[in-house]
Length: 319
Image (cartoon, rainbow, N blue to C red; front, side):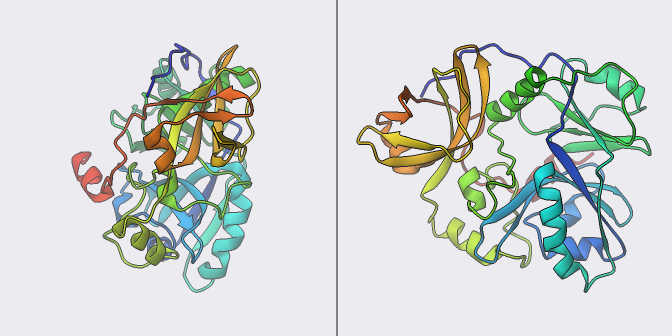
């Protein structure tokens, strides 16, 4: 497999309009979330912020995101803005039996930063979390050190007081870093389509196999312990100047479907990097793969595709 050659970097503070947040509050908030999400909710302690997902009874993901704890009985889920309304409606069916509230947060401002993150942190009186999967928060804002490449995601209660880029080029740079980090964030066009393992979610610590039952848990656990996952997330690049759409088909040399695109971003004027879910046999064989007429070059992921226990991860990152 090749490695991506572009040196494109996230070098500006950028407003991220594609993200949204859903707050879960109340005496039963932890208990409620524990029965719905793949995370061990007790690990979200105001320092460790685990990845998580929500599934159908058949184990298919309907949303994924990162779980923060902002205070006693107060949690926040950060995910694609396109999924907030759907997930709220879905969870309300179960929340009726708990002392908890589901509160979408449409007025929050999401900002991504890398090299200049400290200036933004100073403006909201926060220290930057040093390790991936960790958070800091106060009454003004919260900030996450996201998994993968060195980046921070800020969630502000009011507009920023410093200059922030608000253009598609800067947002593409953030998306490109997601791709290089091997991270897929589902949108409303992709729900109920993938098992979590197809997006390497257990390799990113997004699934606890030590917690009790949650919706879809039996299917997810069976697929893991019986080795039944035949499709996996891969990173690749193509020589093209037009972005593939999520869901576009990747073809083998014989013209048959071997996978589908899940996200893509410009690397430079003539190259695009992408994440796709592909048949593992095709990946292992490295036969000719194409998107339309463009040859697909497979690239390495920055992590091993093997189980990462969030319990161990949280212990390693403990303060």
